[in-house]
Length: 240
Length: 282
Ligand SMILES: Nc1ncnc2c1ncn2[C@@H]1O[C@H](COP(=O)(O)OP(=O)(O)OP(=O)(O)O)[C@@H](O)[C@H]1O
Ligand SMILES: [Mg+2]
Image (cartoon, rainbow over all chains, first blue to last red; front, top):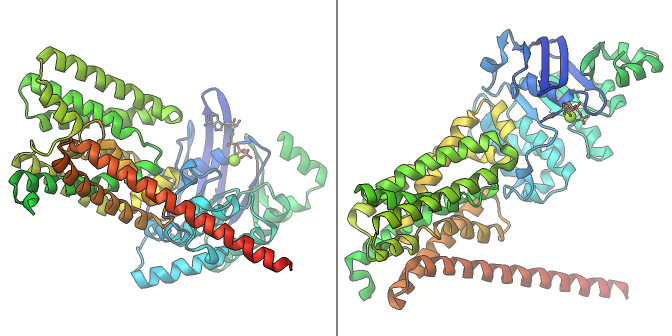
């Protein structure tokens, strides 16, 4: 029930065109890696899918409904690239933040179950030893993991992640990819993830969307992987 | 104690303790939303409301309430437009409030004793109507914060995430701004317009030093705030000083003491580390 459809999406910040005529369909259960150079419009596209910004033209549908009516109900989880500046110094403990994710979910869990889920999520992303530390006093990578855990706690059907592994060490980012892969395979959660770590992202995803204002490539990751390095490079940087 | 026997003291204590609870509750969110000066801005608008109300013959709290809520709506609307310079918009409201207050008070020749009790707070002028208004507004604030707690907390952390989760962030931001206005008017009677904002910020700052979680920080802030109100009102009575000064100075003393304690703990830990590392070397 979570097919994501983009119809002729166009978006510009004032006169600066960030997204130019992108149409694509993400099927239920897909794991899409969104790649492209800095300033290509990846974050913008994710925000459009999340219903945070309204495209200048075109429409996003989630499960056949317009995003602005489908939003909420804990359907979509979103991990932004630059989460609020407010996170610096924020006094909530890691546990409090992850538990907050639960309240966003479709069905608010019972207190005992809530504790269990919160603990489980903290273990999954490897922050259980930081549980009583305050999020504002953690390193950037640690904060990032907590944000991922919070999004997961809501048990979303569609997970949108904007560079969730940027600034995260090798070990932990491998764990996050593995976790996303498991969630995708076992629970059928649709995942759209922006990443600059192309090799890793493509190896875990089943589809790749290469964006540079326009959609340069959208297809299976095998096809993307199999493409001659030269043309991949061209897609990536010039969109030709 | 003779202190508690006076009716006006009982009224002042009741109003003060309610103020002591709601100020840091709202303040906890205000601080993490990086809006620490909003109380000052609204306070000056409240002052304009009091003096303007006096001019047209309104009960001062009502005058303050009307203008402060209007100001809160305005501040929120401006914040939405200029998210990058949100505090600039706030500053303009702040000055507008002060300017209007000066104009109204000089036009009406409002007696300066009345003006001073609004600016500095007062314990003798708290009427029963004031107490009832404060209790009503305080209950409303408590209820709304209770029911919106998770949403407010998430929005303070990251508004985009809240928005994607389907939370109507625009509406809740507006409601929060209005609640802040209510708290300013509630606190105005006892603490005074000049310093009501301090009671929203200082106890929260003290509680932050304890390095506990979000809810615990809030709880401690309420405790520090209520203690400050109680000690401040008592000393205000015995020393015959306006309560705004004594309450806020007490709150600041708590902050200073807590800072010193923190420093001592940090120093002790460093010392311990040094000792153990120098033993380790041998
Ligand atoms: N708030 C904004 N106002 C104006 N222009 C913006 C804004 N945000 C992004 N842009 C512009 O839109 C374009 C796309 O930005 P976007 O953040 O989507 O890129 P991105 O692909 O996510 O890049 P990165 O890899 O650096 O995260 C860029 O040219 C950028 O300058
Ligand atoms: Mg980006």
